[in-house]
Structures are given as C-alpha cells and as structure tokens.
Image (cartoon, rainbow, N blue to C red; front, side):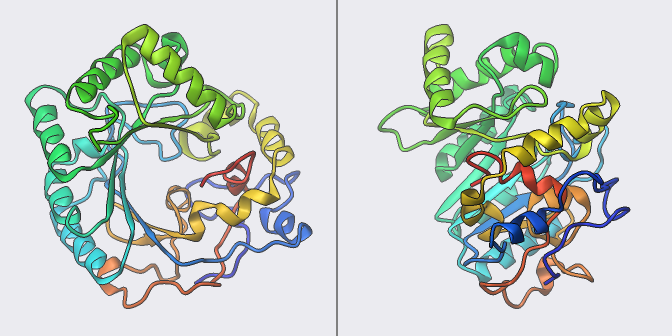
Length: 330
C-alpha cells in the first residue's frame, strides 16, 4: 500500500494541487488524525464511463462518447474475487451501469454472494423492454437501487443533468414504486442521492430528506426509502467547470473551511475497495478518477491474495476535502 500523502502535481488525470490549499495529509496531522484502513466490508465495482448524460458535477467525465466499459471477462474475475472475500456490501456504479451490455450477468453473479447488492442508476439510461427486464432482475435478486436525483426543482436538476432529465427520472421512479421499490413493507429499497447544483455544500441530510419526501409525494406521488447528500468532488468535469469559471479556488476554500475532523473516522474509503472497469484496485472511486491505483504497480482483482490489512495508510489528495466536509462521505 502507498504511504499516506497528497497526490503530487502531474499525477493522475489532470490533477494538480492548488498552492494555497493546505495538503489534506497536513490537515489530518494538525488535528492529530490519520486516515488508515479499517476492516474492508464494501466492494465498489465501477462498470465504466459510458453514460447517456453529461452531468456537470461528474468526477469521472462520464458521457455518451466514452468507450470504457467492463467486459464479461472482467466481470468473471470480479465475481471470483467477491467469492474469495467476505464483503458485506457490493456497490455497482458507473457511468451508467444500465448501458453495459453484460450487466445482468454481473448482477446474477454477485447477488448470491453479497448480503447487500446495490445498483446505482441515473433513472434515464435505458427504457422500454430493456428497462423492464432489468427491473425484473433487480426485483428477483432484491437489489437495492440507488438513484441520482439532484433536486425536486426541475429547472435546477435539468441545469445539472440536461433538459428533460427530471421528467424522465420521475417517470422511472413511478414505475419503481409500482414494482414495490420504495414502498413500505415490500423490502425493495429505493434510495436517492442528491449533489448540490453548483459550487456549494449540501444542506443537512435530515432536512433535505424531509424536503424531498414531501415534494416528491406532493408533486408526483413518488415514495423512496432514504436520501443521501454529498458534496461535489473537484475532479473530472466538475473540476474543469470550476476552473473555467474561475471558481475553483473559492470552492476549495469552501471545502477546507468546512473540514470536519469528526467525519474522518467514518469515511467510506476506510472500509471500501473500488474496482475499475478493467479490473484494477483503487482505494475509492475518486482515486480511480484521479488515476491513482491502490498500489504501484497496480493490482488486478485476479491477482489479489489478501485484502489490505487494518491500519494500512490510505493515500490522499486535495479532493479528499470534499469527503470530509460537513457530515462527510460515509
């Protein structure tokens, strides 16, 4: 495992430290903290960068033109990997996983292994018979659906995701409710994720959940189980947009001012491993976006013999401030 340190200039996909930002490792040290591994319980599987949307906040720069998607061969290796280690949660993400042709193969392979299998969706990637087939598969395996839904204000949400995205998402949410997702007593869990529209921090999860629950039910008759709110991570398309509009330094100051030492203990990277679309290990999806694998040389899941042990240091970069701002990424 690498030493815990900030990513140096020139490393990764266009990642460069801002001179005026205190290195994240120094902020941890100043508070008497260290970011190290706990027991790994979650495997996050990134199926690739292909997406039907080009969201402004995307840290991966996912979009319609991306060709990086997971092959069936890599899926076989990941299923074998998951069988060798006792992950409690497996989280399938992207891009838009629904656009990966062999996604049903991956779900079928992981469902018997994972006590909790999650699938992330933007609620607009597929439709018609393709969506109905995927939904039936998710219901059969009791897959937890985690849907991106930035705002109950259509104009604000469409500003982030593109014109018409909210209308399409609501139509899918209604279909999910009709299938039992998000409905009390069915055991089919539907969670929503909201990122701020722009360079600001999210409001508290509790107040946002209350607002979303009220608005979705009143406006569209839609129900869900939980809402999670996260800060936008200054990587990929979001970082580029901040720099283009001259807001990058201001946003980094917002994040550093909101640094919460109490959030460090619960950060998801402490108990998570991320696997890229081509099968290599990363400490988290943000290190994946930055081009920073969990080891040098990078390790493919087919070659892993043991998981990183508790106490192993986790490499950090300036974008880690987004995970430790406010209530943090947990």
